[in-house]
Amino acid sequence: MSPKKACWRSRRNSKKMVKKSIVNIIAMNTITIITHPEQIANESSILQTLFENGLERLHIRKPDYTPAQIQKYLDGIAPEYRWKTVVHQHHFLAVDYDCSGVHFSVEKRMATKPEIFAKHKADNFTISTSVHNVAEAASVSDAIDYSFIGPVFHSISKPGYSPKIDFSSLEFKQLLHTTALVAVGGISPETIDQALDYGFNSFALLGTIWNSHTPLQNFIACQKSVHLH
Image 1 (cartoon, rainbow, N blue to C red):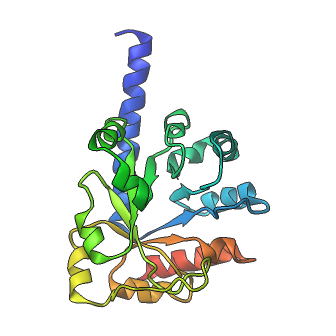
Image 2 (image 1 turned 45 degrees about the vertical axis):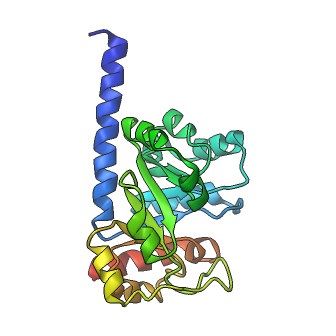
């Protein structure tokens, strides 16, 4: 086997292990952070501190960023943590930076052909999306590894964005047994216990990190609630 082919096979095997790890994380009590859509002061250093304190997965959502800006953003993340990142825009960069996955908005998911999902699967990327009701969550393609669902509570980052799902209903609890769902929207140290009681075991933080003067403390507080539940 040529050195080039051996290197490629090693990389593919490594990515398979990473994907298995990330998908398994969804089945465990864990926390994801979603970036603020705009640039935040000291964002790179805040992320470094969060990774050092146990952050398992970062979703990079910068809808107005060009490919060059996303590249620069990824360059600001230490190489040893890039495998924990998922990109929402400019998916081709996931290959160059050895990211773990790609995310599809509702609109992009609906417009994407099955062969595109198949290609991402062949590249051993996780595929995630966003959903906003039980029927939508139950009907997403089998290609989707996990879905953000919410808002679970009143959004911190989007004032006026409120829950429209009865998360205590039997219908939702049955869905949790068959679908990998991540709670998003208003998740904070004050609300995460209620989300745990709803049956969630994976959570995404945004406003409680980026709209706060104490992002690390909020992350650690949520971490503790999840691990103690």
